[in-house]
Length: 135
Image (cartoon, rainbow, N blue to C red):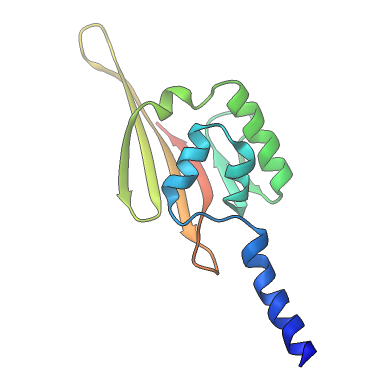
């Protein structure tokens, strides 16, 4: 009987040890607040980071590496202008922040989008697994 209790405890332990979000918007809030520890705790690995910087990596395998990369990007205010853009929720599992700049004549000069990709993990909680800057 004790064996089964221990096995049950070990099965439940991962669900309580790792933070996951019930809603992708929780992860976006942590990202906007530059709370890298919370963002990392809400992330799945391998993590894909492609934002047009020296910190890009197609397969981040460890939390400490992602946290170090986010620290550099957050401290340089790399995402600030993009996060002030228009938020578009395309479909479940994807949130996009679109940013456009215009010339003095009102013509479109540039357009970019910061795309957050989410998925549900084994215990049905949302995790961030990919961050891409397009444009």
